[in-house]
Picture 1: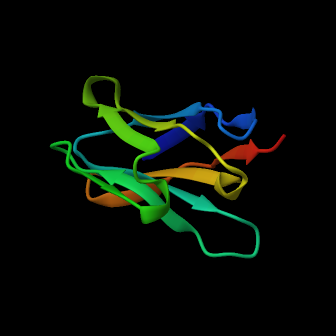
Picture 2: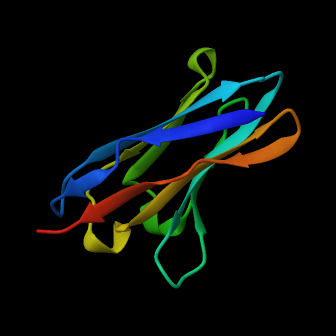
Length: 115
């Protein structure tokens, strides 16, 4: 089993920044694509950004140029640097990753952008 633990969420003013982290622990033999999704109550969970094992990235159009995804394989940790945040970015942010051929999800961390 693999566990994913997110951190770094919180309340931020419009235009501000946050950095989310997601650390994987457990019986990790292989680590493939990882990513962040976000979900607003009553709506589907949507991909924000993903990064594969060799560092190739993919972003939702709504966050391109503002968010940066990265990973530190030695630390089994995924990051999401979020800049120029706006109220539309308010959501629960969920980390996921493919480990040992299976997809795992974290419990999520709340990001609220409000003045």
